[in-house]
Image (tube, rainbow, N blue to C red; front, side, top):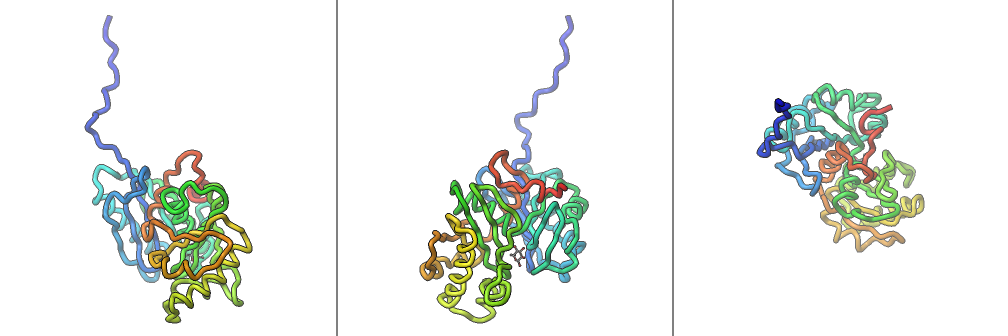
Length: 284
Ligand code: BGC
């Protein structure tokens, strides 16, 4: 009787990719890093390049490809050429297509972002709204971890982004920064960029935020509101001035939330609800 050849044992010393790359596309910078999805930690330094101006889809895709090349080089063994990539963009993304452009170049409207980046990067990609991605990071690893019920994350930056979760499941593209307030989009009254542009003290800015969050509260009666964006680092100056029926806390992941959430969306855990698979993967 002859021995049947069997498949060789896997090489126990071989290192398999264990991280997923997240890319955060913002108005001024494009940032990326490989993320360990067990811990939510970045496993290599962030790579950042300036967002090209004008930030057309083709120019942004070329910069993302360069950022990605540098991120992959920076984490040998943890990521490779087939590692999926999650990307964020400050716009409504439905079924992979960009539908709005409040704070990005208008030429994005109608672009199928998943097809664009899949071709430019030659890898599996998902694309999600920036605030949705940041919210997923907070729900999975940060201030919204294990919180049941309705959680709203608002990101205060150039605009106001929002992410809505019901028992940990994302309801994508809520765009609560465009709720009407004082006769205009709320983000033109209460975004962090407005505070800087108008030189408002934190106390005066908190009054605007109070009005905005009271509106969000009236609409959704959430169980928890998470404040994200760069200003979350100064939450101790802001939160004491707010008076709502809802608990308000600062985000915990600060400026890596977009990268971490994008990576998480590229590799959603089964049943954890934080995926927006059909929408982010470009499914129709
Ligand atoms: C956009 C959102 C985005 C937010 C934060 C808003 O102007 O409409 O899609 O999430 O800015 O970047």
